[in-house]
Length: 164
Ligand code: ADP
Image 1 (cartoon, protein in one colour):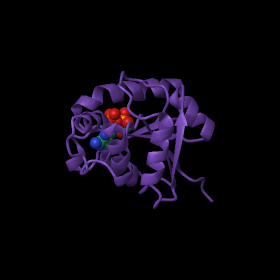
Image 2 (tube, helix red, strand yellow; image 1 turned 120 degrees about the vertical axis):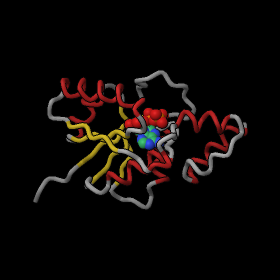
Image 3 (tube, rainbow, N blue to C red; image 1 turned 30 degrees about the vertical axis):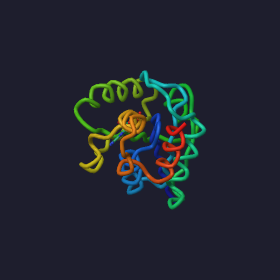
């Protein structure tokens, strides 16, 4: 029997949005197992809202219906994490041209670090192309309605966090 195809979807997921979820569910069309990997080491400067542990817990709650999704955290290089767990495919979402330059550089850098790794880029449903975790954090912190952009477990935690 062929080896199961393990795909890694890395990011900060602070918090998981419906855009992330859309990409993850699309991956399940070609992945036997999808590992949503929360990066402990931030690659781009971002203000943090949830701890890595909280993010992992939230993502698990959003995928209780999907046994092929696992949630993990990693620190250090993505390629080292992938090597360790035996995954050779990494998925990233592309929202707009603005994502392209950074993603393209990272893909080529990762390839030079570990040539066995393949990066796959996926487009989300059109209605999520404007969505980012940072925008969700910002709108939520200013009291805006973000219920259309995140799943109920994420919404609940955002409301708890921001009410205080
Ligand atoms: P963000 O940029 O929202 O803070 P992350 O750093 O957690 O998100 O990104 C993880 C991956 O998910 C990246 O490849 C990012 O481009 C992708 N992504 C984030 N939001 C969306 C979206 N709305 N649609 C498609 N891909 C997305």
